[in-house]
Length: 351
Image 1 (cartoon, one colour):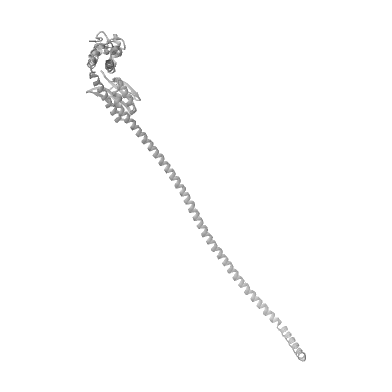
Image 2 (cartoon, rainbow, N blue to C red):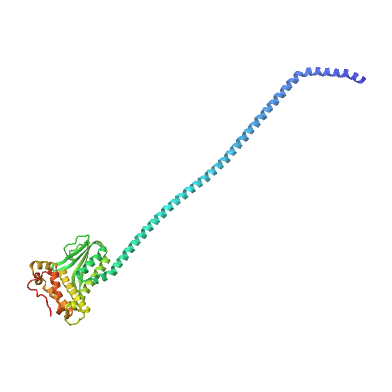
């Protein structure tokens, strides 16, 4: 207790001395504190400014980096999208062009195939016609029928066809088909150079001619005309060849046996062919002879030659029983009027 009592006064004295010293130092200390505060504030402000600028720069750098990355990504995405779009468009165009080209090529091939089929079909039909021509011409029963069949068979090979037969004053138009102007009288020298023209020559004699209007197929017509020449020549030879002899026994036609009936039918057919040939090549003289009732006088040479061929070809038994040649002369040349043959005509001849 005594110690505390001694110390207390001394502590009080020191405290008062400290207060007096603080009071004396207070203005200077206050100023120093203000300076320190100011400097600290300025330092803090500068540090803040630097940090703020650094933060801003970092932020800007981050933004720029991010922008570049985004831009790069955007460019990459754009390039990828563009590549896909272009590839898709090119693929579409290529597919379209390929489809168009394929369709065009297909159409062209189909057209060429159709044309080739048509050409082959035409060629096939042409060869069929060629193969059938000689048979059809050979089966004709008369020269007029031969010429008519020829016109029908040859017509597809030209725009128009005309057949001429030999007359006294030249080649006269017999019949024509299709287009084309065919003159009534023609010859090799005066025929239209654009027309097809070929004479029919049999045993060195010009008996007919064929003319065709363009367009025409020369090779086909040459073949057809050659076939016509052969058919006419064979027909003439057939008329001149004798028929096998039949029984010489005279019977009524209705009572003939089958072989003799055939011989009579052949004789009538031969007479009809021979007389038809006279009519074919001498139409003008025949018309005049009918008007003037002197057919035989005008055509005596031809009629006598025809009868000679008839007698050479027909068996004697038929000749002695019936004159089919006379009947056909009256029917075809005289048009069933015997008086048109004229007084010079000898009439039927039976042995």
